[in-house]
Image (cartoon, rainbow, N blue to C red; front, side):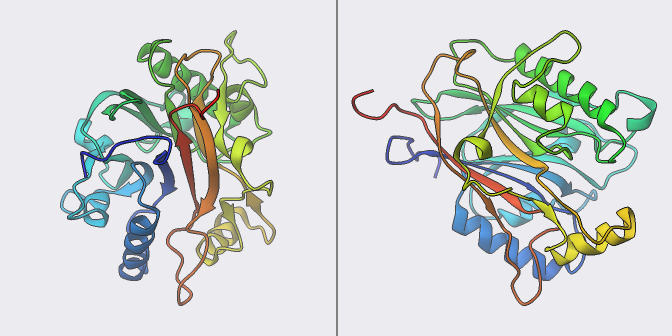
Length: 290
């Protein structure tokens, strides 16, 4: 598997998914997750709320026997509370370049709020690839914290990339809708803290034109949480994202061929997670004639 090449015929495949840890009914969810991951066959994956209880490593179990390289934020730093966190899996070897805490105010004191950055030894024509998995604050009244966290993540990416490198990929459960300040900042629609950046929203660029909701009461697991936590009967948001570094800032060619919401159907009334995933294919070579 490590020798697999990327080309015009074989784009780079990327997935982001909030796994919801070991939440029940986990044996049924685990079987469904394994099946879906094999079907999609991503090259690089960003998982949020990935279970790690000191004995069981959720992502390693899901990908067992497939030769993937895995880095969990708790491999880098063991918190007082070991439960769930950010995790990255790659078809190719990788090294962790930084684990950034996103506990930036008194309202965001939670080990879960972090960004994990790795450099992946992807084959040519990609070469070294910076891949960042972010999980900022989730609470609906914490957009100020998410603004600070988005600026911090942009700084992390700036520290570890150069214009000559392949565009970085930013993935995660950002718990913010496209019209929020934090997402508007990341996608280049507004500035924050005297800084402006531009990351290409892969769904906006290559989705099917729908709302692309990834957290919705259509999902029975999400519906239960929406009722218990938000006390709402109607609730649907797009809060999970894949971003690609802007062509303004990075030289090599990369375009998003397709982007779609995945793991959004139940099997025998069991959903893979309380979130839906986002999956994209990225062309890494220009089309002929360009």
